[in-house]
Length: 387
Length: 206
Image 1: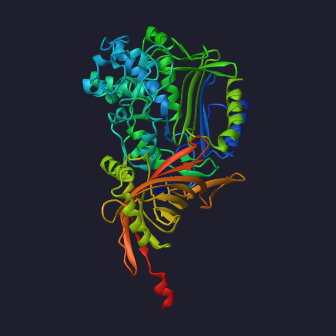
Image 2: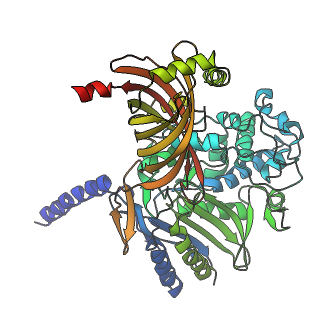
Image 3: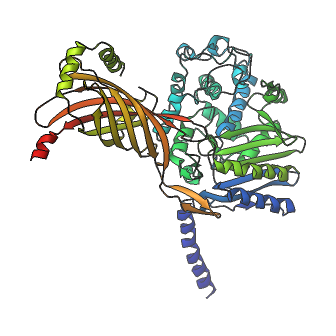
């Protein structure tokens, strides 16, 4: 009788498992807490408010004195009402630059690359010929955005081509055709000007030196920190696609959201160095903790990463793959990212010894009335985390 | 594309025996033709990404009326159904003033510009949150002011009875107020069309 009961229970479990695999793309909780505090309750309410203001889904990961915890709200996929969960993969967008900067600094530590060497030492003459002032630009200038190389992804020809061909995968070398014969934005080393092109070139340099910089990054960063949910240079048709959030864009700035997952995926699958990583909140925080904790590069290199260059207003803004920002009086070191279908921030607050990761699956590259409403809530979220 | 552009420009600025050609046009023109067209649309800068145009086939209908006795200045009116899987379909209602000098034989060149209204739809289902719940948004699209500018070449085949004049053209459309960050979006159209000139007097007599 007892065995029959067990068998019956097992039979009940099997379809439940199958059901959960078939219907849910991600099978994990939407909250991970080692404890329960008023801070968490208030933060959950703020996150719910954010997703109640028209943002489809949001997730926050925090590492503070009480350990690692994370919460989510809203939907990863509006279409089938799939809730945003902690194991959903988020697009890191430009935060990928920090990962590539670490890769470059690892090559620097191995003596395979000089930060002040000119980039023409590492690039083919054919590629260099498409980059204005290539012979005067150093690796460091690419890392801290002082090269003056024009931006590829704000060129109207590129933007229109991208939007018109949402399934098209670009090859890295193609990006240079959009800046070929363009004048430099400024003389190398004279100003700060954030340009994605800098990191595409860095990725090609890393590729030239390692033969496969994706594999190098996987071995030297992902394996070292045991980042099992972090993928660089995503490919379409892979099993992890099911865990990726759907992404949305307010094309006409009218408050209605269009599913741009195909375009977003193709775009990120195309990008190299300046973008191209997907991950979970926990993996993202583990990365930044590992970096700041000296598990990836030496203290000397970490200090180099935090040699900030100033913008035209004289404000320190960027190091080598790291950005420094002010969050209502709190200094945050990390990076942010934005794309057609996602917005994301990964920061370390040294004064508070707090790490935060925040991601939404709504595009942030163009404005929407939804953003305007959500900005105050976002500020509140950081206030709660950093209080 | 550049050779075509140069040819059209050359035709516009150096029409052969302009007076005679225009006189012939003046004698042989008939107002209010019916213009049927295939419209190949793309979101692209002018003369860029031409392949994309031919992935998106829409159609249009229109007419025109002459401004002068030589009939080398005409006002066109067009209604175009834009088919575009990548950025969304649309409907363009426009009017353009066209300068159309006759060239070699019965070949004419054309340059035109005007104003229009583009109703653009999103390429996929969109959603809107109302009172905290997500609903499928109505497919109303967005209406935007548009400024078409175009070049073309064609053949004017006059006949006493009804006749068809084939032509093709390339248009750039500057679409305004696409969203809060992109004030002007360039779109392009390849047009292959036939201008059907019915003999209205015969129609009335019949």
